[in-house]
Length: 156
Image (tube, rainbow, N blue to C red; front, side, top):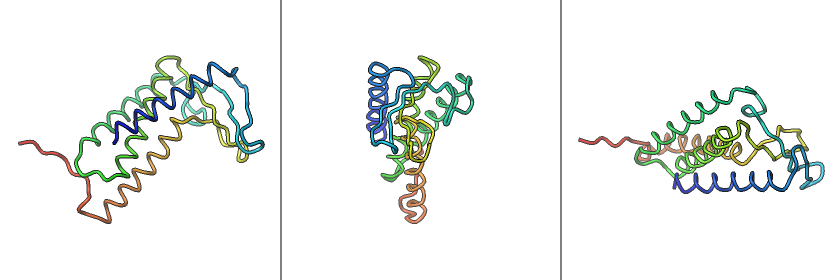
């Protein structure tokens, strides 16, 4: 489940970004729901909300570390569905943003929630956020159902 979710998120993220790059001009905005939601094509050289601009290689290393942690955790047995879903979402999102940073040094962001002036983001960002929430739910669930706590394979 983890890898299927990651592949779907990665392909969707990269596909949407390809459409944005090839059919819009930089800083072009297209209202989806006027006054509430728009597609706004920007290139983000930093992390979430534009923090750490120019820290490309630090952000690449952080993404590689996150991917490593996800792969390590995924090898555990008895991870519940919430936890697996969350790992897949985080993995797919991290791979999507990593690809952008390695290839161009900037991440394509395009979703702007105009109604609350939320910073522009992309599917990979949203997947990471939702993935972390799913992992927290999975951890909470495992704490209340001890028979479903993650365990490690011990090879003898």
